Image (tube, rainbow, N blue to C red; front, side, top):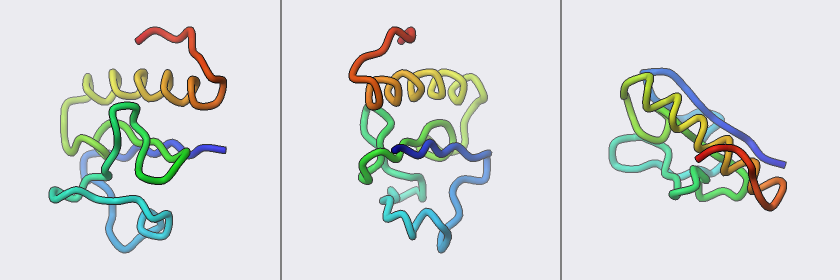
Length: 83
């Protein structure tokens, strides 16, 4: 099982289902993630504004693709998706 989270420019809401999931937030209020887009909770991934903060759509597209590869590797053990 896994969860992929992506939100718009306002960033993640505090006091919401995110806190119920137990994900960590950084000092700017973004969800903390590792280089593979996974949060501190195994199987929960974030990309785009949720992990980076407000940014350009091109970053969100690139991170969405990167997260898709990371999720594919997580679920399948490897991935043929482009980096």
